[in-house]
Image (cartoon, rainbow, N blue to C red):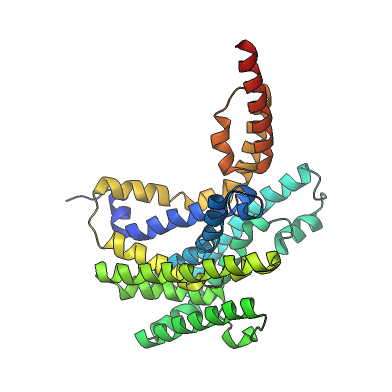
Length: 353
């Protein structure tokens, strides 16, 4: 039997990993919706929208941990020497940072937010003051630099070691929650667990520990994802209602992110890897999953350009009420134009009647 390139790639890649990529990039996009989604709780008077927005904060903040866990699951088990790592992965990744950082810098030059000089270009890429959208690229570069050491670490770890590491992250999360609600914080140096260390190792552990997942494992990981949310969200809502707590609200509600990320990762593996899928469905999942990194790189630029286009359409064609459906993926200034155009449309219809 002959295998073509697409079939061989499909065979090598894990469907559940691509499902996690899709989920994570959707959460990243939601994280960028600002007052129309991510921070809607600060602006809405509708109770349902308020509670849904608050619930989504700790959920969408699992996006970056999930991406790092995917990297751990796919890279920590590979064999590479230092030369292959630096001439291959790291060199390509530095090229990505330089290319997209330069595009973003030119965009800021065009809008007058940055001056034209080699020094400004380098400062923007090196210290990234204007490249907030691409902060994850720098985090991931740190992970790649630590990759040889992380591989050596996991090669000597036992199941008990992984459980100990996860236990430390749980204790750190609980102490963080207590600190936010009591105002008494422990010195975090005691439980310093950098993201580029914790999440890749947890991802590698789940990927290798569940070689034959079943329903019992799915329920276990599902509870790991849901139970922290059932604790932190109601407690945060009660605390925020009785105090002026806007500044610490976002940080407090994210304190269980490691546990929730762990639960989501394990739950998706159990539910996806534990069931057979057709070749057509696998190809579709792989095709969408392969676009995740490209979506991350272009999403901010496309969204900002799309906003200008949509506003132009709203002004030019005031009776296009379908524009309202698009504003959930962009920013609040579209809502203003939509409301104005809606009023004009209603007046126009009343006048005709």
